[in-house]
Image 1 (cartoon, one colour):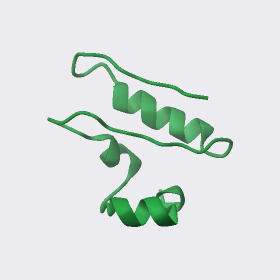
Image 2 (tube, helix red, strand yellow):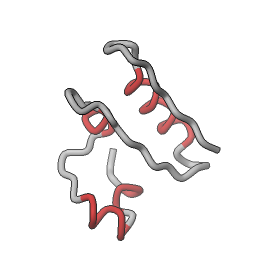
Image 3 (cartoon, helix red, strand yellow):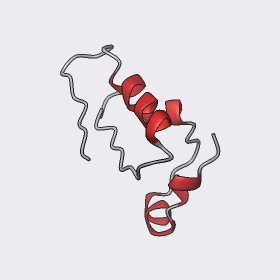
Image 4 (cartoon, one colour):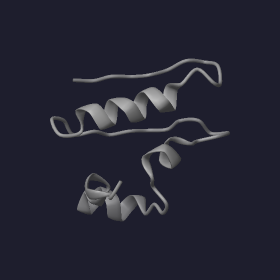
Length: 68
């Protein structure tokens, strides 16, 4: 399944919808999530990501096991 959430304006809830879908479907599906907002990326805040090492997370799948 592939889902893309894209709206050209700020404040329409893209990050909230994405975080909600992740929460609802996390036990049944694997995810790749990209916050492409160059000016104000905040999806990581909603998901509780405090530090990010992209190479290590990709290789070890540690982002799959992040505590919430």
